[in-house]
Figure 1 (cartoon, rainbow over the protein chains, first blue to last red):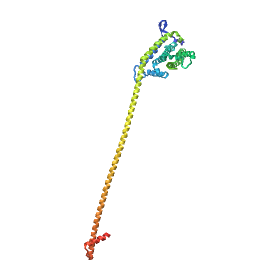
Figure 2: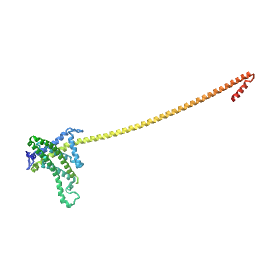
Figure 3: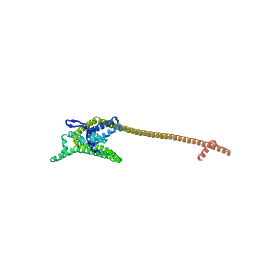
Figure 4: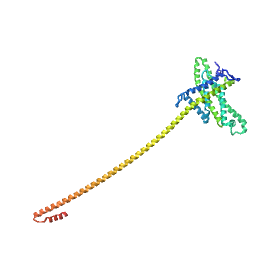
Length: 240
Length: 161
């Protein structure tokens, strides 16, 4: 039986090193490119022919558009629509990262702490930029909410900082854990197929069910990642 | 666990940033405007249609009101003309009736006059006949009386009846 963790190993495809830092184009990077390219191309193809009455293909990007804009309106408010492209892209990026990873022999970059962590880091920086742009120095209030006595500052400020930084961390861990577990489960059960011989039909069927479930999980986790990003964005925009 | 291998972090961060921002750029510059354009166009069109339909509805209501007004007016006019005709007819009937009764009265009184005249005439003749008869009777009895006296006598008795 092959090691179920083998699928997560990152292999450099094109070694690149800039200033002593290794930024090789890896199998993970390949699937990042694929996720971005496939989702963009899919939408572009769906939007090739546009009409007032949407064709089935056209209703795919429009459905996604309405879905994300409703998400933003509900979780951030009407002013959140300014950041629509960011959230829209994030949703599709994560969703396609998850979905493409389900193809046999594919690599799931959303199961990597470093990859999702990078995305959460981008989202965190985006939030901080928006917060500072909106509230100027008042943004620092995030770590010291109004109405708390100054004497408690040494206690509150570190707690608020940890809570602020733990948000992207929890986002990352949630997505990574879900993806990793699903893929390990698929691999382990697939390992039984050969070992059981004729009875291997059972794990095959079981795996089919799990794949369907994983497709659902892939979209659900992309949705959860996006919703929570929206909520954190809302926190950055409003007093809390 | 390969997931916890942080040596690949620079590569991951670099490629993720590149791909994510490239995608964000394409999305916000090309894809999203194209989607939004169509959705806005559709919304505008729907609003336009709704506006138009409201306009048409208003017009229809106006027309209905006009129709009701016209109907009411026509009914009023018809009623008026009906009343007038009825009045005219009544007047005419009254007039005719009056004429007719006048004519009848006239004829009746004429007839009465005629009857009276013929009655008088008959009476006169009767007197003459009576006088003549009396003359004959007197003559047969052998008396001689003037016609004038006889007539006066007849008149006297005739008047007594």
